[in-house]
View 1 (cartoon, rainbow, N blue to C red):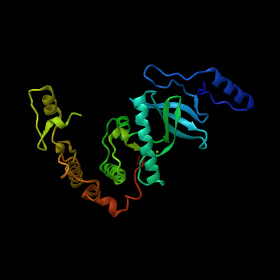
View 2: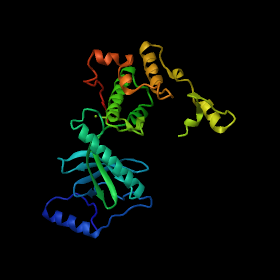
View 3: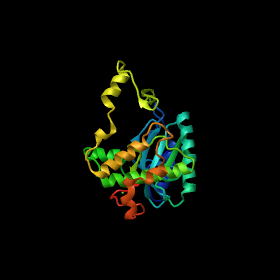
Length: 275
């Protein structure tokens, strides 16, 4: 069977690599993950460098793409499990639509380069981005982002999600871990749009101890912090008909400084948000 192999150069080494492929077989672990190691190749194109992360769906590895001039890419390798493979096919359809609607990548959504089926593992190649907003925060001992960076980041997220909504797409897992730099059981606690719970239950005690008024998380009493929390409250309004749309959010006073200095077109972060 065909498998990955080590990078070799020269005619004799090429023959050795072909022989090695014939001698090995593709293996999965008990959970359906593809078994690989650093230096292995996929499709005679992607050379695995390191593992970037792991999720329920599979793993993401950093690779050298030898057909794209040796650039580094992020390769998502889906488990050889049918439900995850089907989810990957749906994801590919969405990513292809994004590429079609935004060929110049102006709307800050992650760019898919390629996809293929490798012995039952759906594989998706993406541009290699930086840390997530969560991991960056974690690596900096959870030191809060300055308000001017929060403004840029929030504007770019709203800009990207509005693009998705305009194209009838919904991001169903928007969270700090899924917002990258470039270089449910909450419903039962509500009744008629207000928090309502039984404090005698374990769930009720959890809400009492952990859910606090949003404004209590403000660190400063400046006007721009009040504007930020006003925007957050409007976007988290429980009643959909009263909740801010993204078009309304982009016009909020919190973003006014960006419009005055045209920063909405020239992102001024050392590490831009993407995708």
